[in-house]
Length: 485
Image (cartoon, rainbow, N blue to C red):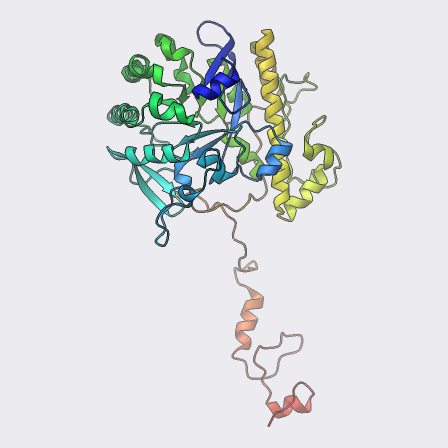
């Protein structure tokens, strides 16, 4: 199907160029009407309040190859007493979708919209039978199916994810809770398609549906997957996978096998990305991308991995808070062609971090985007020439298994980004605190407080009290003041 045909029909096309039978890496291409093909495997960015952290639109366009952005409806539907409706719904479309217009993203950037941020903050009250709990900048709200569908029609993202009853907690879920999760998600997906018909309402607007698959074992989930396969497959443009280990189960549901797969199974390292690609993931949303930039970490890995030299593994990145980089005038990564590495060096970015200058995180974000972009290019090349699995093994032998952790300060976070949980340390370092000596007292403050009540002259080498002990006449005689009458 040509680009002109795509624009007239509004349909999405996903072509699989290479894939082995069963669970295996796939090489493909995803094409929407108004965007260049997204070669897969690939990644999309995760936004915060509609913006890619540390990148303005002009910087993103000029210095990165961002192809898509995940956005959460909870970032836009805050409630204010003096505002009748969220500002985004009053934005003019200007010949493109309201979501693209409001956020300033170019039309060729693929927008993917779900209900919750990724990763999401656990809702204290949980979800209800008819609503999802979301966290906006003004607090938690209930989001019903009808309201969510109305918002989608108004904002017109390129891809929408129907509501799913996900809890995002770290504890073990009972079978009863898992069954309720499946039942609600099944009902919500059914209600979504009853409210919004893909053929008559969504596709003409250029909106495509990626159905959620749940992080639940197959014996419990098979009925839900079977319903997706038999009743909804023709309405779907893709799948959202919350547990990559469930991909093997899709082989029993052939109408779902050829759909593109977006991983929301939060990979914690490039090793985990490679593992999920081996399981058949096509597109990734990668939370650690923004996290490492915030922490002052510059990624340095590449795929294929370089030859191993010496007994030690190579690090996946460098910590720019480390003193060893403060006088280094070398690029962040040897041979890197990104803007940060060709125009600046480690010492300058260390200086910016020490000064808490926002440019430091912008340069790190540009660099880390470039590293991941080249990483996925290498992956696609290896899948194409049949050497991917061997190169994954080489990568595991050469690099450390985990990413570095920062020793410095992150940019200050906001309450609507992260809610504190029990016994969790504060995300932001206090901007000031009382100076304490070894006894836990502040000697300077103690003297100042004492000075407020001392009436005699100061002792030799003692600090002068805040309220002088002499009269105005004595001060005038000594030249410290002038009497006024």
